[in-house]
Image 1 (cartoon, rainbow, N blue to C red):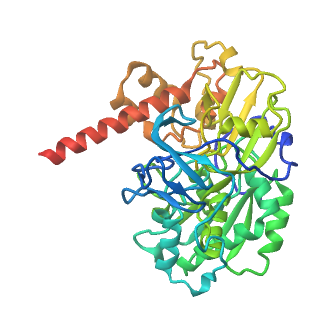
Image 2 (cartoon, rainbow, N blue to C red):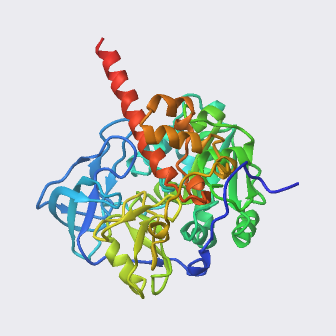
Image 3 (cartoon, rainbow, N blue to C red):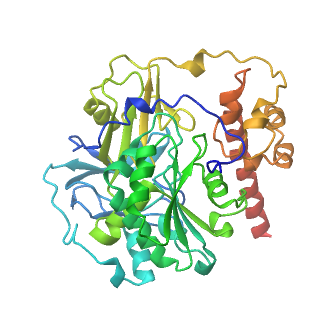
Length: 447
């Protein structure tokens, strides 16, 4: 029997050898810390502090302002320098709390205290996760307490733990599974308390044999937890791809994973749940990879939320060659950056820095109708026809071609011999269609 996988996908250069053998180093920040109030999907958090206030490690400084929102927790002690607009890695300006780090790391009372999860009710666990400000750390940033509160908890059959880390170059999840697997599994056990009928499955690509071996050994006596080796292929770690590979169930853009009886979480998210529930420690840090051929010493770090990215690059030895391209995230789904003077937020997992900008060097040529984009698309849609609709700005045709099913994974752009910017066009069209839908809904509500 072959490895679990999905139909489609591509095999980009992995590049993981640059940092996969580098143990996670704890990075203590030196400069000011910046805490954007929007580090998640949904409504921005509301600042709870003002200029001049003293703050502590573990203090809630931003409060969730809606059902789909998340608290923001301070990761240092010091003085609030300002509450102002600051830029984040995406390029957006976001209302942020700026804290002058005093370097003393004074904490709120009770931070880090051991707690027995077996003594907690389901509501206790969900409340703790919410108060801890935990969101999906794989990049999506969906508030985790909402994900753990489906309409019918008895309909959940699987808790899928995403350890695929299919994005090229990134190795933070791998190092986490190698160095703190007990915490990852501990978080999964906590989540399984919420869903008595569910089984936990840890999906790991087969280019990480040591992680598969280690996690399999640790769960051998856990009747409700197993490890599923996955075929190494991008985007194996995409939510829909992972669900199909492990369970055979299909999820489309109009569905949530819960509609297919699944909840999917990243391994770092699961560690955060363990820390919050079992160690009384809210989300204040995450694992982070700095890599690429322009970096002097590619490395994995444990960084505090709010740390300036320039500091992280310096901790990795700086640049051995001035990069032509710096990406927040990996080369397939990451975003190009024009400055490093931005903070790490909950959804930032890596900096990938290249000496050459290969995308910029590519010259776009006319489509040759080869069909490669169709063959690799994990959503089984037709990128070549969607691009035609995008170039004409035809939203109706884009929707009829199931353009909203696009995962924006970049597989079509990667494989295209004509070097057409397919994914970029689809992102813009999806935004436009979504905006049109919201406008229509608002007009309907007014009537």
